[in-house]
Image (cartoon, rainbow, N blue to C red):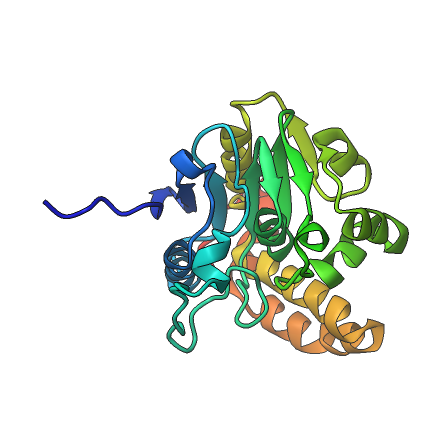
Length: 261
């Protein structure tokens, strides 16, 4: 009998919403290299599927993740392998999702769990969530983007406070500094994330993606570059069928039915 794999990432579809689930409950959802590859594949399939408009990343059990399975990433028996070129990077350091990504978290949410949040767009946290960017306590530093994305989400002082002390902090503290956008009772985080994803799906997907792309242009290249993309963005969106539908639905006082064209 073959040995059951430890840790999996699976994907399901709920209408226009892609739900990606991390499952390694026996090890507090510690993320192995194989799970990171599965996550990358799921995100790539989501990104490349025109019928899917928003992704929700969530985790089974009481905890989001205790972090990376360190020996499998950095030890003598490390199992890290190069990914196929062009896959979406779950940490957003290479190819990044152009569509919205919502993360639902609970319980222990350490290191790579936070960096997955930061690579996405919106975070819904259970009131049990406990955050920790604890690399400094392990003799390393954040390798997955926390060293700069904390700054854009929380500001310099808050970023340095949590990156340099490496202390654990609560869901309420994460809400106060902008690391998460909503805190809900434990057990409701997944449903709330999907509900929010479905709400976003009621908007025109071309407009949603253009908004995200323009925002990323600002964070990566500054205000001048963000202004420079407006003419092309305007030209593309005003020529879309969804723009016509948006105006027509307003005139007819009905809900718009967008197609992404």
